[in-house]
Length: 93
Image 1 (cartoon, rainbow, N blue to C red):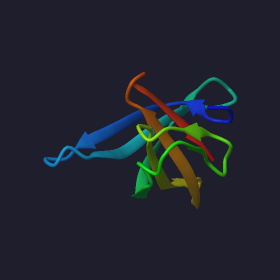
Image 2: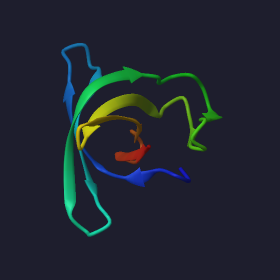
Image 3: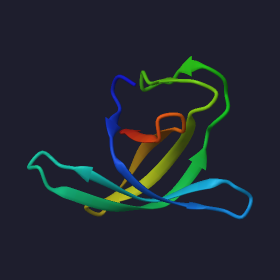
């Protein structure tokens, strides 16, 4: 994943086994952690192996979530990528 940065994610696992991202935590330019609640999300997983528009290479196993967060009063669209074989979350904006 070229442009994706590693992040911390709090997620929920539904009774059906689905994963739902709830909150992210990222390191800012000053080395401080900033946390953001996920306001809305859309899952875009299981579309085969390909390179996404943000230049992130994904496989059919990668979970992809397009999310909206509120940053200083403005809505921002981000993409979260979860690699289950590596247990790693990454983000692009």
